[in-house]
Amino acid sequence: MADQGRWFKLWFASVTDDKLSALPNELWAIWAKLGAYIKTHGNKGVIEIKPPSSILCSLLKVDDFNDLINAIKCLPNTTLRNNNRDNGFFTVSFNNWVKYQEDSTSYKRLLKHRKKLNDNGIRREEKRREKEENKHIYGEFKNVRLKDEELQKLKDKFGDAKAKEWIKIMDEGIETKGYKYTSHYLAILKWAKNAEDKGEKRIGDYYPTL
Image (cartoon, rainbow, N blue to C red):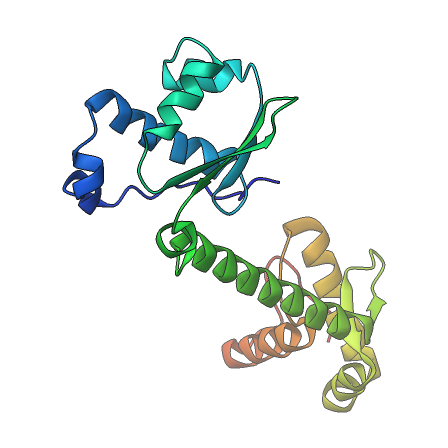
C-alpha cells in the first residue's frame, strides 16, 4: 500500500550532504527520483521491486534491471536486500525515512485539519436536522416550518386568525419569491414588526387581512 502522500521532501541540505555530493549527477538524480517513486508506490520508505521493473528503469534512465540494481547499490543511506535469489525480488529501503519524510509533515497536518472540518460539518448538519425534526410543516404549499411552541407563541401574540394569515403570507412568499430564512418564526415576527412600524398591513407584495 502506498503512503498516499503527495510530496517527497527533498531537503535543501541534500545538495551539500557529504555522501550525496560525492555522487555523479546521474546517480544523484537516480537517488532523488527513486525517493519520489517510493513515496508514491512504497510504504514507509520501503518498496519491493522485481524484474523487469520496466517503468522504474525508464524513470531512472537505466538500460535494464541489472543496471537498476547496480545503481541502487551505489546510493548512500539506501538499503538493498535480495529477498529470494530464485525469483529476483529485491527490497529497497530509504534510511531515516520517518525522520525526513513523515515527522510533522504538512500532509498529515492537512489531513487532520480536513478531518476536523468534516467532523464539524457533520455535527452542524446533525444539529440542523435535530432542529428540523422538532418542527411541523404548515401552509398550502407546505413551506413553513414551526415548532409547537413557536406556533403557540404566534397565536398568543396575534390570535389564531392573524397567526394563520401570517403563516399564509410566509408560505406564499417562499413559494413565489424564494424567501429563505433560518427561522420562519423569527421571520414572521420581523415582518409583523416592520408592518407595525410603518403603520401598514403590507408585507412584501402581499396585503394580509388582519
